[in-house]
Image 1 (cartoon, rainbow, N blue to C red):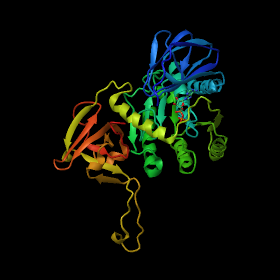
Image 2: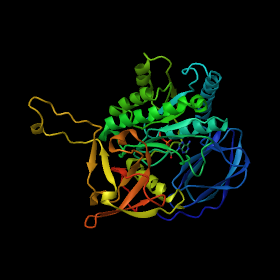
Image 3: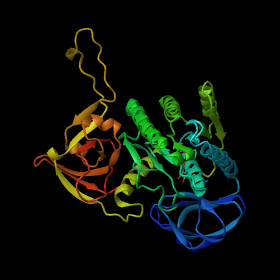
Image 4: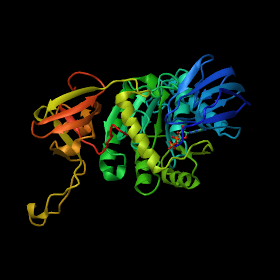
Length: 430
Ligand code: ADP
């Protein structure tokens, strides 16, 4: 694209309950400042003073409840104001969830069911604003002092850690406008692909592991139990995608299903959970501000998320390069596509492939540019039930010398020698 023209600083006067929608370019900085009044970006208030640098490629809305003047400085791809937003409905939803949290807290010490706060799952097609609604609900709750758990099941466009993971993290304060979800302690399980159809059984198995770990944490922590969860899901809502949504509702014992922007999906889910007690299926409007992203764009975002993990959002981290001998690590893949040949089976036996079987993988040059997860497992057979410590990116494989070179966000030895292979790639020049 042609270099963007210089734009002088400009101010926008926003009426109550309106928003300024801004798209940031990939390679130009844009700063935002609150001049007067109050405003928030996806549930997090703008500081009363000073400029905020919005990360490249962000698409944001600066919303005000009571009116505000805001100033932009730098070049943007687009900027316009709108007074048609679903924010009142969203904040009313938040208020209902908040009342449920308070009720759960009041029931502490009593029965487990009553002391469980809302478990909200947000569903809808791609680009319906699911992640954004999750952020708002979490930030509004955190502002009131709750510490809800954010669960991200979106392996394609997840916002907690790198793609290919399902993960969870407590949200203890409104989500930082610039830095996003805090990355200190996510509980992450590695699936290794951006699409669940490659091995849905593994995806389900990992959901069960994550849910079980959270269940254990909640049973020892009344505060996070009462605060509940906000669960983000994939935008795939048909066929297998729909089936996995139903699975997620079950596995995480969701009791509030928020359906964004699709009447049909709302109706289907409502009918599907009818027989189960205490699940509310609520239909919500999607915001017209949600920016549509095509699959190429999404693929690019995945790449950037991987890059960010190693280099930081503002390119401010320096990853560490390291070399290991092939014999120092063991790489596995979860799930095999291959079945045992019939000839190897006893006569009459049907071949059964265990979709969650662990397969040892030989290190080869095919691994260059891929991401490997470092498992917390002590033994290979614990890999599927273990969360991961972090990720490395393979930069070179020397078959002759039997050495693998990688970058990692931290220096020093790997926390474990058990690694999980993936189909996620990232190229330095991207
Ligand atoms: P989904 O999770 O359903 O795929 P997202 O919540 O990620 O959708 O929204 C898609 C994009 O639109 C994101 O970049 C998000 O920041 C942006 N977006 C969401 N709501 C608004 C809004 N009101 N104004 C401008 N951009 C928005």
